[in-house]
Each structure stands twice: as C-alpha cells, then as structure tokens.
Image 1 (cartoon, rainbow, N blue to C red):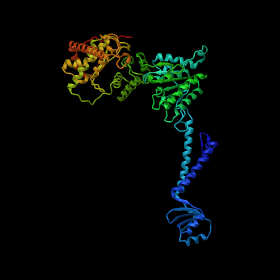
Image 2: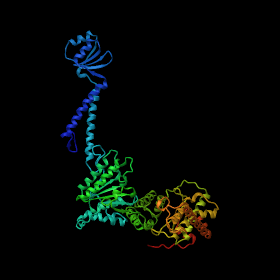
Image 3: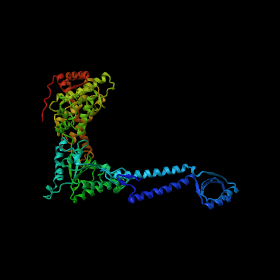
Image 4: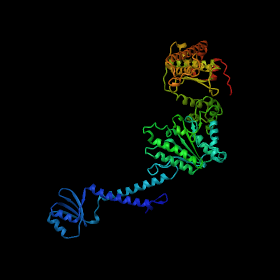
Length: 606
C-alpha cells in the first residue's frame, strides 16, 4: 500500500524515485552492517573446501545450502554450498564437527533487528516528508529544515480583524497620523492623481504597553486588508541566510495579498545600527537588515499597495538607513495616556467587569499618572481578582485602592513584626508628609490617603491625587514638593529628637528635584545656564560644580527648615494625626480634613 500525504502520492514522480533509491541503499547498508556487527566473513564454496582440507575449520552448522561455521582461530564465516553427498565425507575426514538443522525452523535475531531497522528508516523518511508538507502549508512557515527559510508571520484576514480606531481608547494624535495610511490603502488613486507619494513605512514609537500593536491592527481593520504580523526576533536564525530568506518570503506573501499591511514588532531586534555585531558587516542579523532595506526600496517601484508598520521603544539604536525618506520616514509617537485617555481606557476595560456604582473611574484615572494602557488593564483585573477572593458581588472602591497599592508599592506585608516605637516613628513620619501637603493647598497636589501598612520596601506612604496632568511646574510647586518630601524627617527630628534611615528615598527625590532646579531650569542664583554632567557640549569646571553643590544644599536646607517650621506651628495637628493613624492604620483625605478641622481643598475641574 502506498502512503499518501496531504492528498498526494509520496512515491510519485522524481521525488518518489529518490525516496525508493534511498530506501534500498539504506537497506543494503543495514545488511552490510549486520554482517560486520556479528563478526561474520562471507566466503565462496571453493574457499570453504580449501579451508576444510587445510584443517582450519573447527565446526559448522548446515541449514539447507547455507553453512555457518567457526574456524579454529575462533573467527566466523558463512557460505552457500552445492548439494553434494561427498561434502559429508570431506567433513568427516578432516574431523569437522558439523550439525544439520531443518531449513524452515532456522531463525536469527539479527534478521529481526535488520527488519526493524528497515521499518524505522521508512518511518523516519515518512516523518521528514510529512513535516516538510506541514511546514509549507499555512502562513507561518515551519520549524523544519525544508521550510526554515519561510517567514514565521501570522496572517490575519480582514474578516478576522475586529479592531478599528474606535477600539483604541485615547492616542488621538497617533490615530490622526495613521488615518493617512488608511486612506492610501482604501483609495490610493486619490493621492496618485496629484502625484503625491504616500510613505510606505511608519514607525510607531512608545513605551511598552501603550498600544502600538493594537494601533497597527486597528489600521488593518479600518482599511479592511490582510495583516501580516511578525516579531523582529523571528527573522534571526543561527544559520546564515535564513533571516534574509524569511524577509523575502514575507514581502512576497504581502505583495500577493496586496493591499496589505506588514507589522514588525520590536524591530530593534533586527534593525540595530550595522557594524556593532561581533561579525562586523557579515553577521546574520546585518544580512537580514540589508535584505529588509532592499525590500522596502524594491516594492516602492511596484504597483502593489503594501504598508510596513513597525514598533519599537528604542528608536535611538535603529540603523539610520531604516529611518531615511522612502523607508520609515514617518514616525508616530504613542505616549503614555493623559488623564482623559486614562479614563477612556478604564471604561473600555471595565465593560465586562461588575463594578460597584460608587466607583468613580474618573477619580481612579486621576490617581494613575504615568500608567500605560496595559497597566490600567492590569489595575482593573487586580481589583476584580481581589473582589473575587472574598466572594463579593461587585468590585468596590476598596478593591481598586488595594490593587493600586499593590501595583505601585507591592503586596501588603502582614508578617512584619514592628515594635510600638517603630510604629510610632512611622506614624509621625507619614503624618509629617501629609500635614505639610494639607497646609500648602495651593502649591501641592491634594492629599488622597495616608497609611502605615508596610508594602514592598515601604513602611508607610502618603498618597496625593493630582487634579490634572501637569506638563510644567512652577518654582513654587517644586519647592513645595521638596518640603513635603523632607516633612517625614522633619517630624522625626521634631518629635523624637533623633533621625532614622527611613527617609532615604525621600532624600533622593528631594535631591534630584533640587539639582534639576539648579542645572536645568534656571531656578537658582547660578542663573539660566544649563549644566549637564558628562556631555561635552555642556561641560563645566570644578569650580562651577562646587557652586552647583552649594545651591543644591541651599535649596534643601531652606526647604527642610520650612517643613520643620510648618510642623512646629501645627504641632497639635501633627500629634492628633499621628495618634489617629496609629489607631486606624489608613486614613483618606476626607477623614484627615475632618480630624484636623481644616477646610477641604476645592477641586478644580479642567
């Protein structure tokens, strides 16, 4: 029976002839190896008779016309004899011990092993060709020697792409830039009639988790065209030339399905500046990059509409040839979402989550500056997991607070043992931060909550809740932030007349901010010059460095004294807040305002 693979006869045509020839050669080799492995030497009939006459044969076993014998030097042989009754006389005359067996009953384990080896060889050849067939079918190539040069992309046809620009919350500017790509794919003649040439390469730049891949898919969904997705690392292989072959195959497939989109994620894996590898300009990665550059130039001369989108968070390491006009000459920045975008993203991810009516996603968005879209999705999921653990019917504000603290600081440490004195110091430390924030309502972000529950490496924390995203800061606001950062140490010094190591991270924040004020923002007595250490264009002398240090220390000392004065003038409020915090462990802004008898800060809507 002839084995068929994929509906085609495996043994038909030139390929089948080659397979049969290989099988026979292997079988012949196995037979030879069988004799060698048994240590048996084949001799002809005349030689056998001469060895008997010389007295070299010790004993023989005769089965029909097959003779298996052993010489006196313990070597073995086999031969085929002619039917002749005189053979018995010759053997008797020369004292050869012989045995005659029934031919049909003879069996050798070596024949069985040879047969099994033959079957194993056939199975191996069948498996190899089956893998080759499987690797060649489908869009992603295969993991075998016959399809190693095939591209490993994933192909999404228009009917399977559900994403469009409405699926992407925020990123308004990025979507606006990408609409040109959609227009070209849908109506290329609109551009060609005036001689305009739309860019064929768009580089999406942004930090991980901000939606670069989702935007690329949304473009394909809007344009209703095939979407080829691949990672930059999928091109690279240890075998020379495989990466370049995969690039050629990818672009060939894209042209066949034009208009189409090729999306290369993490392009910096293959597009790094040439000449930086150990192999100079001849290593595999650089050959792959050269082929990519050639393909991006080559398909511009054809009529097919193929757009290449690529994503990276390291545009600084890309080869300049990739970024020149005609290749990735359009760059679309995908930044961290702003306040409005964060609220939109939270609403998208909250659609399938049962959230309590009291949860204000706008307020949660205010408390998540610097979160990426992936971080916000994780926040929703962590809150849902927390609610599920206690079998709640809905996800509450408390669950979101727990999820936010877990993401920002780490899981709550319940096993940490602290003495009453340690807890008291931590309580005054965090109360010092919070009280100064409350007493500087117009200069600092409003208080959100304060806690002395240890998380991660923090024994406690005082949270603020920004009213809006700030893109610039005034000198007044920066000095207030430094005073708040130093408020914890100031409270320890004022109340206990001793200092601890718990203020290290506060000092780092305050020092970095003070140095930025002096070196970058012109907010000191040194004037408006920019001092950037390690840059030849902004190098400064040792004398200037000493002046910078003096100004930084001046800002820190003045801010520390300011913080200590505020706490000293409001010592009763500091004691009251610290005692309440020891009892409750966590207090929200409303509770703090009520306890201290301070008017709550009026929230401004922007």
